[in-house]
Figure 1 (cartoon, rainbow, N blue to C red):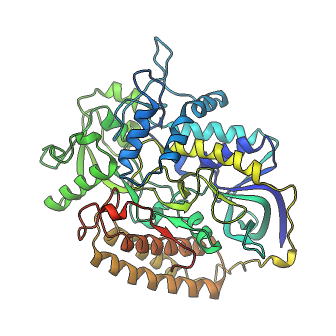
Figure 2: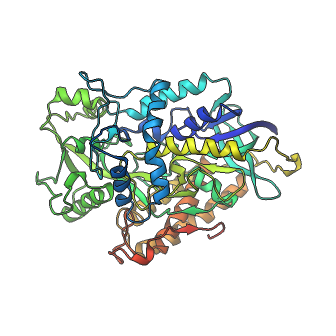
Figure 3: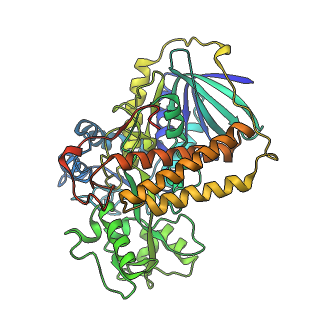
Length: 526
């Protein structure tokens, strides 16, 4: 088995991982691994923007207030304040790296748009593909840095722990060489993104299989708030479209939701109508679809001209046009889809977990910022600020040397892909995602959750038997992770006996003050 050593190992190549690598390279050797191409991340697909206060008419206090209100009592005030106060400086740092944002042609000032849950226009953006712009510039910056090694097609299998249960690196499948190796590091950081692929319909790319949450839990990390899964209200509904998110910024520019009869239906759901937080809008769409039996609703922005839309939303405009939809003339058929994992590996505001040597940043982490629901465009902001905070913490924590013994390593066996029965993997992969979609979706109930628990537990048992018998492959490990994370989400949802934010249980339709606390899952709870 090949053994590699580094100071800091970062697993994942979204904004959180890359920005942390950029900052930590000032004092350490950094290795970044990613299981596919570096740009295959949720960051790359982000359309809306990054929330930050640049307007004198707005204030950090307003941004904090909006974030706390959206979090429904579970956001940690200290974490929110840290994030908001660091916003402007971090965005200015992105600009120095080369990231472009839309500016007013006359004044040169950053343009701001407003999204759901915000009391002011405070979202900086670059057209409707800010994520791609940020991802490309960060990848270029990291590749040009001699202190950072960025390795693609390196799939993290499990974390490596020492005799004292601290994390000292990861076992990694080199997909190019089809060999398993060990990477030993003084500090290991999970920046693996979310877990949208545990659901049948998602806005996430294929890489979002919950790998970081699964690895952390198996290594002994505490998890928090996994029942809070954010469903994006508007993904394109089309038989040939896959994971195409229709930016919330369209609603910020006045887009209206209508049912198939053309009737607006957000009236009475929330005073903010289409600009209500995502959980409210997603539930309203779900309710309308169930009431009418429709498979989708319409998002209407035809009051804007095609020329204006081409300039403001080029990605959405061109993407929809490929499916015969001119959004300047045609209403857009949309449905909700799993979008963002609000809960995750429990950390403090510096990304530190309960395990020595292990940190987590970005969507994989639960830093306390989002509470029971994420405010729009706070995700990239959290990734930036918490990555910077994590860099400072690692510098303080990191020892000059790391003591480890080769005898501690127990390398997973590489499976024979010809022996692994892919029909079983494909069936279980599809089944667990359908169970999660049908029973643990936007609206839940005790009955649905208990059915999901039994079915997902059965799938986990099957997957674990296959895993033990045939050894590892990328598909095998991803299925293991999806089944485990799904089980943890179900368990968390069963524990919370109320409705709050993104977790809505029809058997407990009201918020219970006794549950104004995080749902903590200790190691070994399932």
